Length: 168
Ligand SMILES: [Zn+2]
Image 1 (tube, rainbow, N blue to C red):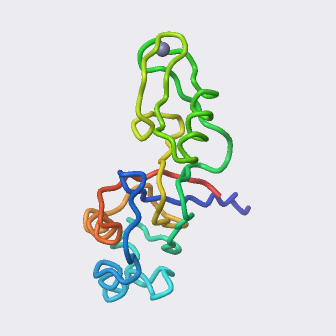
Image 2: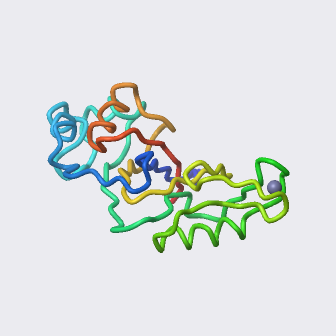
C-alpha cells in the first residue's frame, strides 16, 4: 500500500532579518559542497548528500524574495501568545509583520498588559523565521543539519542562522 508522502523542507534564515549574503553560489562553502559531492552546481543533491543532512535531501535552493518576508510552514497559520500574560496575539502579530514588511521596526505589543517583544524574538507555534534571504534544503530525511553541514551553511550565508521547518 503506498504511503502518503510528506515533503519536509528546512529553511536556514540569517539571524539578522535584513542580512542578505553577497554571493551565496560563489562562496567558498558552496564550492566546497560541490567539491565534496554533497550537491551538483545546480543545487541538486549529490552522492554525499548525507554530509549535510543525516539521511540526505533532494535539493539546495536559494530563496531570495527581494525584501523582508516570513519563512514558515506554508500550511495553516500560527499561534502566538503574550510571554507575560498569556493572551493570544495572532492578530497583533499579523499587523506587526505587515508593518515590518513595509520597513517598520517590528515590535509586538500586548494590548492587555503592554509587554513588548521585538519581532525576530517572537516565539510562535509552529516556528517562523523572519528574514530577507533563506537557503532552502528541500526534501530532507531528518530535521537537522550535520555539524559539518551547519558550518557550511553558515559559510554560504556569512551569518549565524536559525532553521525552520516547512511542509509541502
Ligand atoms: Zn500580555
